[in-house]
Amino acid sequence: MNNVERLERARHFFSMIPHGNALGFEVVAAEENAVIVRLPYREDLIGDRRTRQIHGGALVTLVDQTSGAAVICTLDEPEAVATLDLRVDHLRPAEAGRDVFARAECYRVARNIAFVKCRVYDDDASDPVATSMSSFMRASSTKGNMFAGK
Amino acid sequence: MTELTQLISEARAAGDYQRVVDMVPYASMLGIAFEADENGRLLFRLEYNERNIGNSLLPALHGGAIAAFMEHAALLELVWNQETVLLPKVIDFSIDYLRPGRPETVFAECHVIRQGQRVANVSVTAWQGDRNRIIATGRCHYLLTRSEDEQR
Image (cartoon, rainbow over all chains, first blue to last red; front, side, top):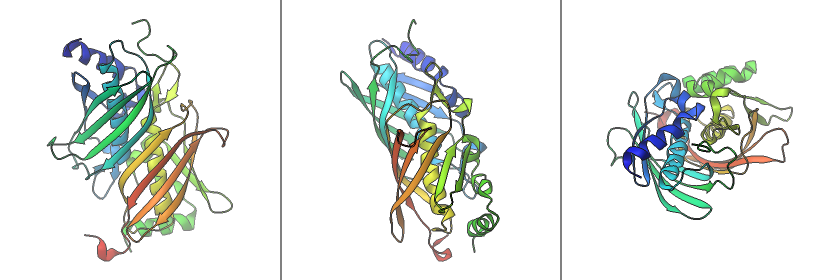
C-alpha cells in the first residue's frame, strides 16, 4: 500500500464518523504507520472565553480519532478498531485562533491489540500542545466494521 | 471576586446549572448538563445528539465525545464547588473504555480524590441506563488558581 492509498483509506474512515465531521477534522497526510489530521480553529470549540483557547476535550477527540486512523493505515486489510484506553498530557494551551494538527503513529500491532502514540501541535511540530499514548482493540468480527464489503 | 467566582455564586443562588455549562462554548456544543441531587452530589449528563456519533453502523457514541464530557464534568465539579477563582487548567486526562456508548444519554459522577493547594486529582465514572454497567472510567489532574493574587 502506498501513501496515496493510505490517505484514501484514512479519509474514508474519517468520512464515516459524524462527530469528527461535526468538529471539522481533515486528514492532511498518511504515511506508513502514521496519519496527520488538521482541526481548524472554531469559536464553538473554545474551552475558556477569557483565553479563547480550544477545549482540551476537543483535542482528546482529535487524538482518539487520529490514533484510530493510524492503526487502520498500519493494518494490511482495514478493520474496525475500538479504543481501549487513552492518556493525554496537556503540555501547554493551543494558541487562540490557530489551527491544530495531530500526528499519530502506530508503533506496534499485535494479534488483538494495537499501540499508538500521538502528538498535537499548532505552528511548530517540535513544540507540542499535547502528547498521548493509547491502545486499541482490533475487530473480532465484522460488526460495526466501516470497511466491510469495501 | 473574579468574573468566574461571581458567576458561580449567582448560579448557585439561582440553581442555574445551565448558565455554568454555557460559559464554555464547547460544553454547550457537546450537550452537557448537570444538577445536584438531594444530597448535593452533582450528576452530569451528556444528552444524546446525532452529532456525537462515532460509528454510525453499530451505532455508538464517539469515544472522544465521552472523554471530553468526562474531562469537562471534572472541571464543573471543581468550579461548582468553588475550588478555584479561574477556570482550572487540565494537566492530563486518562480514560479506560469498558463498553461502547449506545446512542442515548450518558451519565457521569466525579470524585475529588485529592485536592492540594494547586492540583486536584479527580476520578470520573460514566454509565448509561444501569448505573452498575459502567461504560468508561477516567482520571484527571487539574491546575487550580486559589486566589486572585495568583492570576496574571
